[in-house]
Each structure stands twice: as structure tokens, then as C-alpha cells.
Image (tube, rainbow, N blue to C red; front, side, top):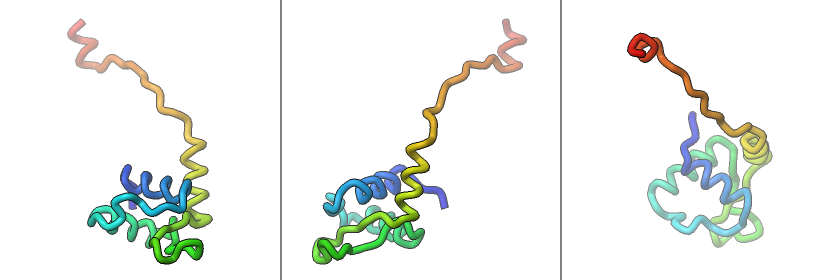
Amino acid sequence: MKLTPLHLMLLLHYFTTPDPWPQAFAPAVVRFTDDLLGLGLIHGPTARSPARMTYDTTEKGNAYIRALCTLPLPVARWVVTAQEERAV
């Protein structure tokens, strides 16, 4: 499964704070949270706030975030395609 930007936002949120996601009951957020639970990237609700439905990242989730943080930023490379070369 490929993660979407919303998956990553949720994962980073639970990595950085014990607070619930602001729109925790929105259908997309519920579905994407279930995805993260199913992938073993988060677990919850946490013992520190069981009534608030907060989540924590698992060791797997922490490792994934650390791996993302080590990726270099992309760089642009300008190339001339074969078709453009003939037109010049």
C-alpha cells in the first residue's frame, strides 16, 4: 500500500503530539487512521488518555518517520528531449 499525504500528516501528527487529530471523526480521517493501525504504524488509544482516542506511533511508525527524514530533497534536472533537439 502506498501512503498518501493525509496518511503522512496523520502519522507525523501522532509522532509529535498526544492530542487527537482535530477532525478525528471525519470519514476520510477515520479510514486513513484505520489504514495506519492496520499497517502497524500507530496504536491506540493510548494509556495516557484513553478517553480522548489519541494514538501513538509504534516502533515501526517511528522507524518509517526516521527513514523519511533521511531522504535527500529532490533536485531538478533540465533535459532536452529528442523531439525538441530536432526542432532547434
